[in-house]
Structure formats: structure tokens, C-alpha cells
Image (cartoon, rainbow, N blue to C red; front, side, top):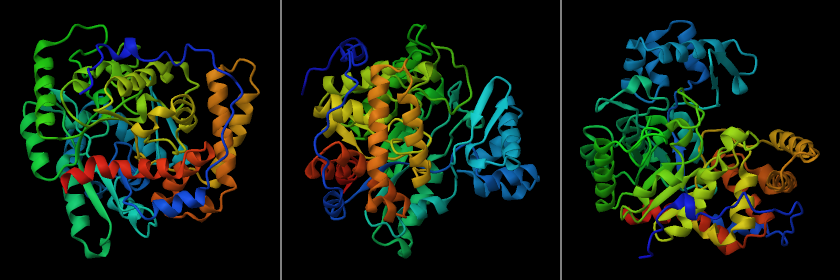
Length: 472
């Protein structure tokens, strides 16, 4: 086994301090149709799919506004969250319900932004019902399966606080969804996989981890940015390590490794939750891979960095946190046998960072491409042709700015080129199924950058290889 590095943050390549050339020389594009012909022949599993999100669907918002309480449970990821939400007197819950009611009257529901006190809650176009999951694979040409993720809640005094779980979706709810889907003969040929999520600070975390493994979980997702502490046992980056918390975390990581349970880590800044956004908080730093070294060094053979340390709106200097992406790169170099990157969010219209993924892993560090895993963050919306045209205009506008950094110039140049390439692609125009559109989008991005057919096929197979095949 490769000797692990001592400090990912210190030894990671200083990607963003290097002078970058504004001009980008690219190889000839790869034949996209040849890529897709091969992809159709392999098992493609989306390794990052959500079921249930705190931001409610429009139907849930309308039910709240009209006080149709009896209809609310069906719109949430679990009865447990519904009961906690309705019984809660917590200000965050009241704020969430007020937000749900407010979006009903918004003329542009999908992009609504509601101001509530000092916190902004952006209404990403999530939904939380089974229809989205069924739509993902139904009639898909390229999709064979998807890992559906639970998302655990914060813990207070050792007990799960589901009322304050920003993205809370219970393990039981996801397991039931997956089981029912796979038992339905109408879904023959497609399969869902259970992705667990367990907060290690819970008093019952180890028992839950063993239970999840026994029920067929193919991974466990850890989301420290929403849980109020860091993966190394600190609450904020200014704090000392909490010995009790560190002991719980160390034991959890050890048991996960002994169970051969892959760990999926949310990385990058997370602004889709309530809570303090000061530079030292867990909300800002909970996704920093440099705080996750205890997980990398735990002996687990499969640790996957969701989003590869990136926040989508990279021109926002505070949220960009480029050191998170730098630390992700350092972790993949420092732990080559254990740590993988994952591109979920690239190709979602809420985020603009596919250009950064391209700039970092395909242009600057192509040797890391074989460390990337396929995942999408579904059901966040993908780019329609109209949205691609808007992105082209946005990219051109930014590229005219005299104050644009070399790094951002490279990113928006790649955004522009990829968007134009996809708009000219008949394959992207023909792709109607949501799974297929995401496959074609990422294949188009990689083809534009000259990634070979064989390398792209390996990329699209990797989630299946890491999560599914070991369980067969």
C-alpha cells in the first residue's frame, strides 16, 4: 500500500497559485457517437442520486399553504421527518414552512429565491417522490442502475435531531424505495441500490452501520457540512479536537473499513443549508478534504470525494474555496489506492463547474482522470438547449471582463466550448430520458476535450465497479 501523506492540505499541488495561460490548446475531439455506442454496451450506474430534499416540491408547498396537512407525508422522504417537522417549534422549521408557502405564489418557481432574515434559501428544483426515480431509468438507453442516497440528520446529545436535518432522508425510507422498485417486474433490467447515510456522532451509529451493510447498502454517505462538525473531530477549524467525538469518529471509520463499506464524502462548500456561514464554520469547512485525513488513513479501500471539492458558482470568491479542490487533488495523489473523485453536479444547470472539472482533471491533471467516478446529483435539472444558450452568453460576458483571473478565463473558455459542442450534437438533442441526457452531456464534455473512447467507457463503468460489483 502506498504510504499516505501526512497532511493533504500542505502537500496538495498549489493549483491556483500557478500562472495559467489564457489560451487553451485542445486535441481533436473524440467521436461522441463512437463513445455512446460503447457506453450502451456496458453497465452504467449513477452513483449519486437523491430521494427527498428539505426544499419541498411545488405540490408540498401548495399543501402547506392550503393547510392540507393530511396530504403532506407523501411529499417527504419519510414519515419520521414529517412528524418531526409538524411537531417542531424550531425557528428553522417555521422558516422552512414559510418558504414552502411563499414559493407557491412565485411566478418562476424553479429559480425562486426567497429572502428570510439573514438566510437565503434557494429553491433548487428538487422533488421528493418516487416518480423522479422511476423517470430516471424508465426507457433509458444507457442507464442500468442508480445508487439512491439517504442523508442523515444532525445529532444533539447523541440523539438524532431530524427536525433540523436540512436534507434529512431516513435510511429506512430509501431502503423501502429501493426494495419496492427492484421487486416491481415492470422495472426488470434496471436496478436501484441502497446508499446509506449515518451520522457517526449518534450513539447508535455503529449498530446502524452494521444494519445497513446487512440490508445491502453499497456505500455510506457522510455529510459533515450539514452535521455541525468536521471529520477530524473538531467543531470548527478554530477549535481543538473533541476527544469524545474523535473516538466515535475513529471507531466508525474503522468499522466501515472492516465491513468493506465504501464511504462517499460530500466535499466543497455547501450553502443549501441553514446555519452560520463564517469562514471557520463546519458549513463552510465541513466539505474540506484536508479535514478528512483520518478517513483516508482508516484502511478503507474506497473513499469517494463527491463533487471533488468544488462549489458550483466559482466566481463567488467566498464560496469557491479553491483550496478544497486543491486538497481533493492532493488526497487522490497521496492515497492513490483509496481515494477517488466524483463529478456529481457537473452538468446540472444550477452549477457552472463542469468547466472547472474539465480544467482541473482533463486539462491540468489528466493523470487523475482514471480516478473519477460517475455520479450526477439527480434530480437537480440538467442543461436544456435553452440553458446551454444562456451559458454561452454568460461565458462570453465573463470573458469580456478585464479583471477575470487566468483560472476563470480557462474555466469559462471551456464552458463556452463544451456548450457549443453539445448544441451541435445530434446525440444531445435526441436524448430525452434524464439519465441519458446526463450521460451524453458528460460524454460530450470529455469528447470535446479529446478523452479517448476507452477512457470514457472506464469512467462510466467505475461506479458499478466500485459500489456494485463487490457486492455481487
